Length: 292
Image 1 (tube, rainbow, N blue to C red):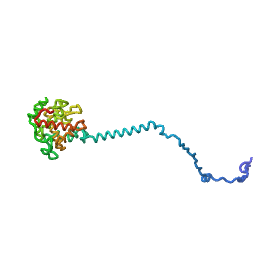
Image 2 (tube, helix red, strand yellow):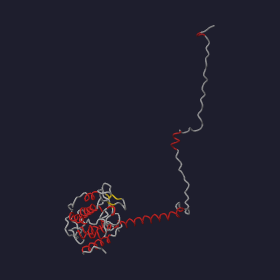
Image 3 (cartoon, one colour):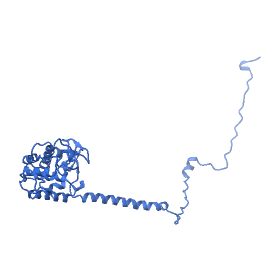
Image 4 (cartoon, one colour):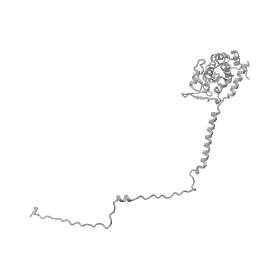
């Protein structure tokens, strides 16, 4: 059999392509062009219907809301009235003062730790900030003794004082601190009837002095300084009046001292206290032991 280049070869003929005529319709524009020409339709919202007769949301709360607001206003006004009354009706300084280190002491003994230390750590009269004259006015506590030791002992014995017979200590303290001991005896009478009444029977204090760091504190009625003897309590009063009230604050008369010593904020009758002290010392200066 013949083979190779002489062999019969099958020849495939490609059928001629038939040309398809273009469509009769118009050509479509591209998607991009269509997007560019398309515009968003406006959003049309339905009109809101307002009901002029519709109930307000707070209307249903009015039955309790109005009384609540009125009560709040009344409460605020009442608080302001009470605060203003406490501030403006106080005739003397506040009973308490704050110290820089947070400690609080009654104004009677100085108010601040620094003021308390000035007088309680002193031993004898300290130089005053201002000159002190021997007689600065009526009922001045500054001056020489106006009562004798014997007369003061008679007073203490007459009232059955547990400090009877100790008038010499009062007299000596008066000379040491430049104060008239008649006023120390006067304070002693009006604070505790010469140690026969109240907490002074325990604290041995001439003046019912409030607690201070130097002495133990007897915790009764707010706290009072506790002394080891009547003599120690006597000198504490002289130190307090001379080295704080007079030397630091310039208070020398009964009228000046009492509003601070026994302030109305501590439920004291300041005017009555002053009048009682004056009446008592006048009675003794007249040579009468019994004070009516």
